[in-house]
Image (tube, rainbow, N blue to C red):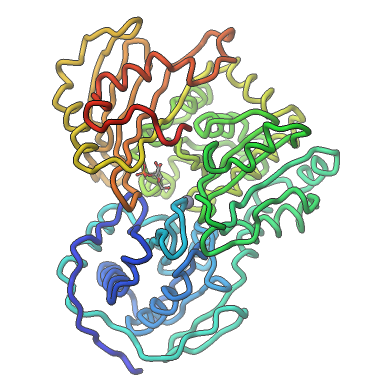
Length: 543
Ligand code: G1P
Ligand code: ZN
């Protein structure tokens, strides 16, 4: 084998964020940049000789080039086989499914998730462990440490491997197997949900619209909704994956999925709308003229899980990230099952799922999933909703409002301030943190602050501790405001303000969240001194 040891110099900025290393494409295109990071992964995980790796990405710009580099490095670093999604494509949940199904030594996923793509867009890479989930912090920290002192990487000299046709190629003794990116995943979905019931629903005149946002789930949606469930072709939109997502921002929320939102709030709207993000792990759920918050969606899935084939035996427990609303906590209480509160990021759910302590997990950021894989899963959530709708035969809005009637409503919104100067954003957090003791006991109209803290988490399974995971301002009536800086951006800083108030009074359940939360929004601006410190008091994205 023609292994080359290529001298290199370390880059100081290869610290993985909330979900892997994300940078501008142009950063990844620098000589040795991707190679250094990949070698740092391989040097951190003790690759057993002949191990199998999964490799694929969301198809964004630079995906193919990166795959060829990683294949040649995998061959030089002792892997015996790499399974690659056809054309280099794998959705994040499909990659997790395949790692688990074929019991491989983990996988490398190339994605910057919901960030824009293209020549000037973002690219990303992360390593998932053999359980199929994102590497936990102890591994991502080890990778970062290696990346700071790396001096060489290993690669073989060989021509590129064909990726478009299913089959096997020999790459200097390592087997490269190009696999169907969709089949294993579709089969797993069919094992969890009652496809016949959903077929009947779709044949009954029920209309749906799924928006793949020109990202990775297009081919998955085609196979599942059209081929297997018999939905008419016009149930899908933007289902051809493009390297730049058609110039859009593949983030399924009310702001960026506006094309779908206009249809679902327009005349002759379909009964159900859904969208997923760049790499297929996020979801947005809509009914005719009605938006389901991701926190409510998680709670509803938990409350109705038993009626769905794959969860008929009941769920062991639930977990949500700290900024996610407490709606699911109410359901857990009524089901008498444990509910865990973790830091932001799917990697914190892995241990709980591996230990069998939780079945369902979710984040307010449009991420929902279960222990069927170790990633959040966009199409899984859409199918879960379709399965519930097929059984209940009520509208999405009816189902949500009946849920609120039973459990109360956690009125919720997240305000994002994108592209803030880094110093100003850090200044806001520092200001709040240093003001904690002055804030406790302070009243603002009907609201009084009971407690403030900096969220930290001790993993109940392995005891690892994660600190500084978001500032919480808790009010005496159970409302709260959370402040957190994003860990997935590639330029400037994004401040996220999460607002939540519990509303047991059913007569107020129809209120728009922005109106119901207007007092809290003012308090958030006042105590953070946002306007003075950043010049801004209007969020760029509201979800
Ligand atoms: C965001 C979301 C977080 C999610 C992550 C990856 O991270 O807020 O819930 O796990 O993307 O999809 P953030 O940018 O807030 O660090
Ligand atoms: Zn994603």
